[in-house]
Length: 295
Image (cartoon, rainbow, N blue to C red; front, side, top):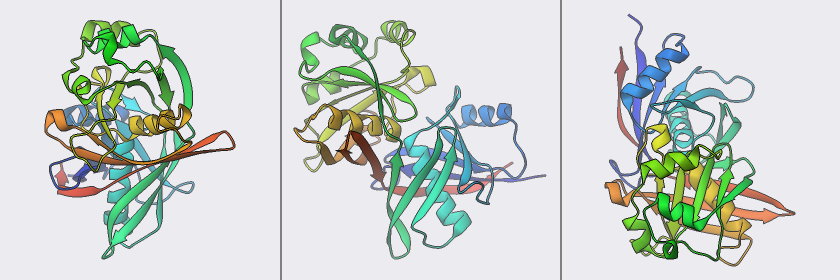
């Protein structure tokens, strides 16, 4: 019987059982798309990743990412979590960088070490694209909020760094906390746009060391609420710089997410606009939870 290596990690976590959990699988045999999809559905984390080879190919390690419902080209916490496993379980020595060859293209992940153990990890995302804007009234109805809860100073906009998200600025922490997804209006809205998930945020936080409080709904992908979303927060970073949310063309902030579902996560966002190009880095910590064999 061929046995597959299976790892569970917490990503964007300050400690075990916080952050966003991820299953990483190293197949001991060639897996069909159907089998990978079935395993991702059975794991039922927001994403499951598959490292297709222990050897670099075309300058990086080939990796595929599946949600319980579908394969996706890019996601943030699977990228960091999988790079952590590649460094720890395949390379097994400190390296400055690991490149993951994903559907969206090569994504480099860099490491900061403490006692030869990865302490912080950072991924460089591709340049953001800014798509359509949505009516404040429409997004308030999707989130079961009053239109006055949506910050009129900034647009509600689709942004993509590989996977598109609706970015919605709210005025207060209370508004973010009381939001409840209206599934009928949500599915009616995403039917007509590229984005299938909604990130909404406010400049008030539960923990004073953070700068933004974030939530993200993604029912389309089988994830009612995600505890930490690197790809969406990368889009948020681009949005913040594009619209000068903090009044300048660069950011270096900490974001909190997952508090409503008891998975408090912390993401680090750095971005700057230079000569019209927005460069984005998303960082955080990864904690090993469990390892075993999948039969």
